[in-house]
Image (cartoon, rainbow, N blue to C red; front, side, top):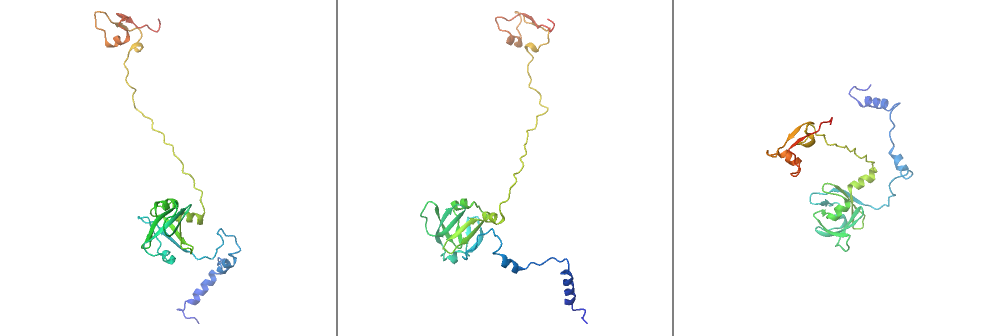
Length: 224
C-alpha cells in the first residue's frame, strides 16, 4: 500500500494521462543533428575556422569596447591602429595608414575609437550596435549591427506611409476692399453741377480734364 504522503506515484499517473492519446509530440534533438547536412541552409558551409565575436554599442565618445577580442590578438594597451574602410565593413589592425582608404586611431584601455570615416561607412551613430569579429589573422572586422540583423531576418517590405494633403482653410467673413463711387457707378439720370464760378469737387476734377471740363453734366438713363 502506498503511503498518502508519497506523491511521486500520483505525479507519474498524471503525466501518463497527459502523454496519452492526443498529446503533442516531443521533438527529438538527435533528428536535427543527423539531418543538418541533408537539408538546404541559407548559410554558407562552415570552414572550421574559430572566430571571436562581440556585439558592442558605440558610446558617447565614439568608442567600442573590444576587451574580449584585442588581448586574444596580442594587442598591447595604448597602441596605434589603422582602420581600412571598405564597402559595408571596416578592417582594424595594428599599424599606421599607408593609403587614402585607411584612417588612424588608437586602442586604449580596451576601447577602440571609431573615426568619422568608419562611422559613416558603417552608418552608425552613438547608441548603435556594431558587430566585431576576429578571423585569426590579427585583424578585427567591424560591421553594422543593423546590417547583420537584416541578414538574419531577411529584408521586410516597408509600406510607405500615406501622405495627407492639407488644404488651406478658406477665409470667411472678410469684406471686400472699399472703392469710391465715381463715374459710371452713379445712378442713371443723376445731374452733376460744376459751374465755373464754384469750386469743383475733387471727384469731378479727376473725371474731366481742365480743357474739356463741363459746367453741367447729366448721366444718361438706361432708356435713352
